[in-house]
Structures are given as C-alpha cells and as structure tokens.
Amino acid sequence: MLPFEHIINIDKESKIAVYRQIAVSIITAIRNGVLKPRYHLPGTRELSKTLGVHRKTIIAAYDELHAQGWITIIPRKYTSVSDRIPLLKPQRWNEEDVIPSYENSFSLPFRQIDEGIEESRSGLLPEIIIDDGHPDVRLSPIDELLKTYRSYTSKRHTIKNANTGTEQGTSRLRGELVHYLSETRGLNIGPENILITHGAQMSIYLTAQLILGPDTNVIVGSPNYPAANAAFEQTGAKLTEVPVDENGINTEAVELICKKKKISAVYVIPHHHYPTTVTLSAARRMKLQELAATYSFAIIEDDYDYDYHYTSSPYLPLAGSNHNGNIIYIGSFSKILDPSLRLGFMVAPKNFIDQCTALRKIIDVGGDGYMQNALAFLIREGELKRHLKKAKKIYHQRRDFLDTLLKNRLSPYISYVLPSGGMAFWIRLSPEYSVRHIIETPHLKILRTDEKLNAFRFGFASMDERELETAVDFLKTALDRF
Image (cartoon, rainbow, N blue to C red; front, side, top):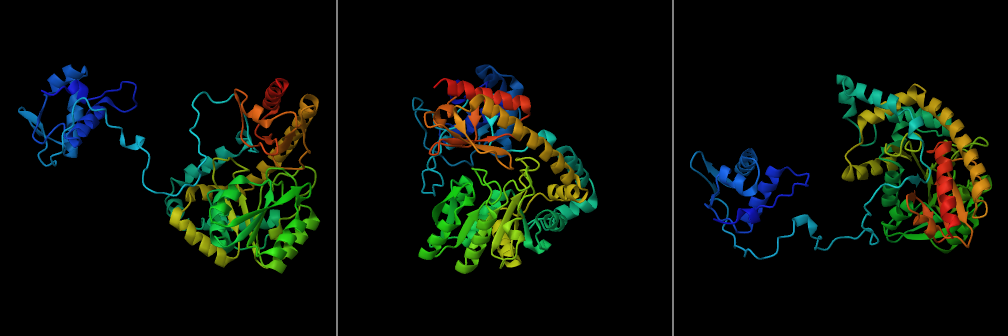
C-alpha cells in the first residue's frame, strides 16, 4: 500500500475545500505516474482514518474524481484508477514536490508591456490615502443610479434594449449626451458622433491606435498624464514633450516642432491640466487650432475636470469652436460619480467613431447597457445637474479650507498655485525636502508623485474638513522629520 498520507497534501488554512484538495492530490499522482491505471485505491473508511478527515469528505473527493473520469467505482467492491488514462512514468518518492503549474513563469516569448512591475507589498492598508483628484462618492447620486439600474433589470422591454447596440453605446445614453454636451459645452453633434467607453483611458487608447503608429509623432505636455503617454508609446509613435507653464502647453514650442517634422497629433488637457492643474489660455487655444489647420494634425482634447470651475465660467472646449472635424474630444463621468464606474465618451466625426467602434469590438464586445441607460435617466431627469451644483459648492469650500491649512501648517516646506477649478492641488516641495521621503512615510499613500519635479498631487474633493486636516498633519509630521 502506497503512503497516501504523503501523496495527499491537505492545507487546513487553504480556502479550497478539503475534498477538492484530496481530489487534486490524487489527480496529480495519477498524472505523474505514481498511481497507475487499475490501481485499487483505499476504501473510504481506511483513507479517512489515514488522513484524519471525515469519511464523507473522502466520499465527496471520490465522487468528484469519478465524475471527471479519473477513477472507476464498483459499489461495495473497490475503487480503482481508471484504465483509460495513459501509462505515465512513475517518480521516486524522495523527489521534490512538483511546483503548481501557475507558480511557474511563462517561459515562451511574449511582449513586455511594463518591465518595471514590482511585487505588490502586503500588509495593512494605509491610514491616509491622498488621491490625485477623485470625487467624494458619499455625495454622488449612486443610490438613485443603482435604484434605476435595478428597475431596468426587472422589466422585459428594458432587458431587451440593454443587450442590443452597446458596441457604440446605448442609443438612449448617446441621445441624452447630445443634449447635455450641447447645453454644457456648446458641442454641435448627433448620436452618431459619440462612442461610449469604459472610461476616458479607453477612448485615449482607441484614438492612439487609429491615429498613431511607428512612423508618427505625437506632442504632449511636460509633465503630462502618464497613462496617456503610455497609450501613445505603445503604438510605436515618437513622443515629443513641450513645456507646460502657467498658461498651459507652450504653443510656440509646438509650432517650432511642426516646422521641423510631421506631427500626427497633439494631446492637450485645456481645463485643469494633469498634473499641474493650469488652464490653457485663450490665446494659446486659438494658436493651437491655427497650427492644427496649418500643419494638418489631430487635436486629442481630454476633458479633464471640465465640470468643476470655481472662480468663473470655464472656457468652452476646443471641440465647441469652429474646426475642421479633426478634434477628438474625450470625457468621463467617473470624475462626477465614482472612479469605479467606468463610463467615458468620445466625440468625433462619424467615420472615425465607426472605426473606433470596430476596434473596440475586438477587445470589448460592448458596455453595460443597464448602467448606460440608468445614467441616461439621471441626465434626463436633471439629477446630474443638481448633483454637480451641490458638489461644486462643497468642493469649492474644501479647496479653500485646504488652501488655509497648507498656508498655516506647510508654508515653509511647499509652494503651489491655488487651482481655479478641478479637484486637486499640484504641490512642489522646497529643494531641501524630498518627495521620496514622503512616499516612504508609514500609513500614508500618495497616488501621484513626481520625483523628478519633487512634487505631488493633493486631491481634496474626496475628503471632508476633518480628513483634510488629518492628511495635512501627516504630511507635516513627515516633513518635520527632515
């Protein structure tokens, strides 16, 4: 009799049921040739005593093996390894345990997307998380959204409509967006000009895949949104950075580059540039559009934090002005509702939207029709506008409160310009202090830092006054240790 107490490994701490662990161990022994075809396995009572488990656990394991065809059960006689399994070479008992399949690395050639991936650090969640500008979900009309979502899943006609036409986005949501974007941004569009995506990042990726390639050039600001840079670089395009100052991306630098080489696209965040929060000036907006017409490049306009402006009415988007159709306008509802609700949109000429939809279907056959229609309902009923009005007032107060905190408690260590809108501050540390030191502070996590510029983003919208005060105190304690 083979030593089944060594063949079968049971980990009582594992989340996998014991009977399944037993079944897997026997399968492994069969595949390794330790248990040969027709070999008689111990009876359920005998094996339960050997392993110190209940007999019903062994019965469940044998039933599982029998259902999968690994063993043959002859009632009241014997249980044996199936004779339809090919004879495998046995292994010695003293050989090292076989490594589970997925603990091995993938050894065949494959494309490396990020060679700097680090192992995730285990441990407790940080006590304070400073995000890079997220909305406060506690203020968001999520309850109303989910209530509408649930109602749509129980009605026959809404079930039918939710499962058709989601490749480009439901007709209901695209129809509501036509009116919403016209009223709030001055866009003159139809439903055929809109593609609904899983967040703005998907829109950026799709746009990059269609416009850029190995022999193309794209201009971005410096510093810039890292995820956008990554999407552009993955196409093989050459990334050219131009400075971003207090008036936004430097259009004079853009012009100089255009005179030297062919540019396929310029990526710009006119409202509250990421990460610096600056707004592109009116003069530079006009200049950029003139350059696009002269040098025939696309403008990829990222509608980042457009809905949150505190000191005056925001400039209309570039896409809202007269242009030749070569502006790809990208936005997201994640900054209004919840970052985990991946609902974004792209606005472009119909022929471009058609091709983006075709590409999107290759990697994602469609979106969540119920959620899209629920959002359409919120827009139509005015719930989104009411939420934005309330949220803007509260976020404005939090911005001013954080401004006071930073001036009173951290002014010796930092410098910043009060943002006119958006949901974050761009904070630079004085040269004698290092952002690396702050990153390593226990119980504190900052989502967006820039070691090269010795700066970080401080998202204020998601925190109430007490939470903002606690976060600033953490920062002060870290900086006082220098």
